[in-house]
Length: 609
Image (cartoon, rainbow, N blue to C red; front, side, top):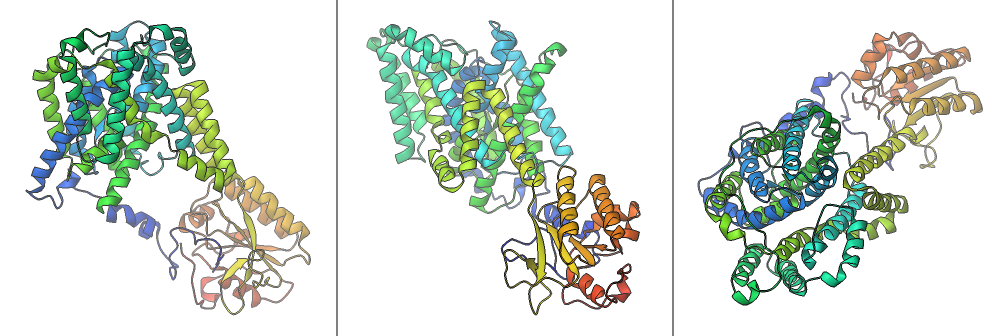
């Protein structure tokens, strides 16, 4: 048994287990035990009185969603009514499949900006084709999410590290904020990078409309202050209502304040737009970036709300919910959407008990599209800019940057590089840089794992690092080696080199080497070849190699590769203490024979699979 008292025990180990099949491990049993299985998942425990709360929450969410979805549609370069389409179709689809009870699916600022930045170069000057490509992107996002759900990747696609995500959000927040300045100032706006936008504002500073600026700043202050002081109140609805009333005044109508303009009413007929396969090379990376943003934001919000209300979510079902929502949006002529934190908190604070609140919100979208589009035509553009600017304030997590600078300067540097990548390369490439950084950080940790030599804690069968635990004693004639990470093809060469160095430079030379595989639950052929090559090299020097705490799948592959002759018995897992005890029973100076289960003395603790 190993016990490095400074490190947590490997995940999935079960003291006292020695003959456990892989299907019986805790890791295999846990998902089925804690994740919802009913369709829809929220039916469990739903009470009739919850319907009243869901109706109120859905109505409150609709009051927030109507103006914000219009603003996000405009940010995405889409017809403003498509923002309403997103809430209309996504809410119904997610309610049937998703497992979060408070998550609200709709347009988000980051995805909207990724769309406009990418599609502006694919369909320049063609708003109809721009909208069609955005709808096709939503369909591709749904297909990617469906594929990920079928592959059961719910637990692994959330791989963008928190450090990189912090940098990305700050960078994206800056880009989004700069993109809204022309609308706030009453200047013409067109999709471009933040540097050109700032240059254009400086060049047109004489044309800034003071009434637009005043209206936008007042609305922004009201939105931010209202959310801070009365987070449960429908502040956006109140600000929108006051703005509409203000725009009805003749004196205000005479001012140079741009309004939203005509909004087509009615419910769209479900259909998919045509796809030119020559554009697929551009749309697929865009869809992948939208998928990563949508899933990371959605699963983070869903987990936060699940912890708050003490229930479980299923990451794979969340992928299905995301897939269903975006496919439904695609048929409804919308654009990619996600479970955003802002709208989800509005839904939660209004008292939502299930996704039925999303269905209620969808019903309000139907009413708005049928009867209220004429009312919203007078919405001032500075107000829409203020709504977007108010929604991104949560993206500027400066406190997290300060914490990174205080705790880990390398992580802080990665966050800063991500910010600069988003600002310098654009949102889409910034997302890809964020993913590459996250994977590079993970691979770096795995490719350069910590390797330690273990010694026995006196009077116990526990083994710990000789460096970290001065009371641990080396085992005479035996070198116990452990890699504190899983052995995989990209780190086995380095681990093999360290084993070889120990074999050459240990004085006196060991008679046997025990390799502890407690952290390795599965191996590949590269690992098998490394272990076999090292075992042959050690055998040539008269040194025996044995494996401790080898998991079932590891032993199964080694048996298939006929490694028992060099690595010993692979029928079951042996603890370090068992292997040391078996070696101590052999005459000194002789090669230890293959360990046999029946020949081993009983151990106080057995290794887990």
